[in-house]
Structure formats: structure tokens, C-alpha cells
Length: 128
Image (cartoon, rainbow, N blue to C red; front, side):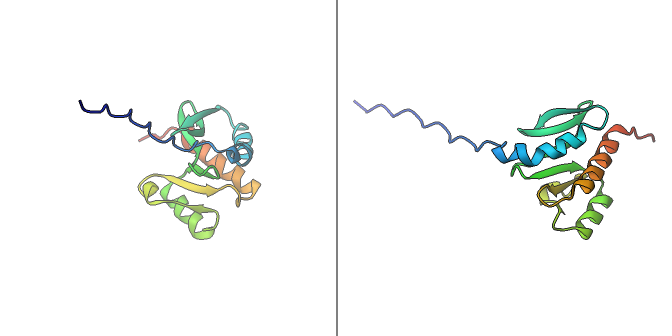
């Protein structure tokens, strides 16, 4: 009689996409963003996010230390050119109007500006 197969091992747990460091690094950005009308806490891809009327304006990247921020292609390119230690993007974001922001590097006043720009992008209605 054949031996029964042992039960399959469960898939290893994925690391928590919201590391403990997120709360400290992200909290400043979150507080600033909540100064703008309609900003609400949410999640996106399993990480903390900021939305306005359901539209994503920013979220924590999977590393817990970087903010994925709504931008434009032109602004993203200018930001990366002027401050590559602060701003970057990965191949995944090449065709999307998002910029990655190293929260440990960006100055508070600059973070406020970038968040306000992202907020305006998701709250301004485009007319053809």
C-alpha cells in the first residue's frame, strides 16, 4: 500500500508590506497631506495610502521608506534631474505619472510642496 503524501507546506508568508518604520517615516507626510481638503487615509497594494474622493495621490512604497507620489512626466524628469538623491523611478513606473520620493532625504518644506502638487493633480478636473 502506498504511503500517504504529507500535507503540502503552506506558502511562506510574505513580509509585512507595512514595516514598523513606515509609521515614523510616513507619519510626517500623512500629517501634512491631511491639511489639504478631502484627503483620506486608505491603502493601495497593501501599503498605507492617501486618497482624495477615492483617487490615489500618494502611497508608501513596499520598502516602507519611500513615497510614491502623483506627478507628471515633465515634473518627474525635472525633479530627478535636480535632486537624484531624493527623487527616482523604477522601470515599473516609466510609463506612469508617478515619482518615488525618499522620505529620509526630502526637506519638510519641499515635501509639503510636492504633496500639494499631488493633491492638485487629483482634485483638478481636466476639461477637453
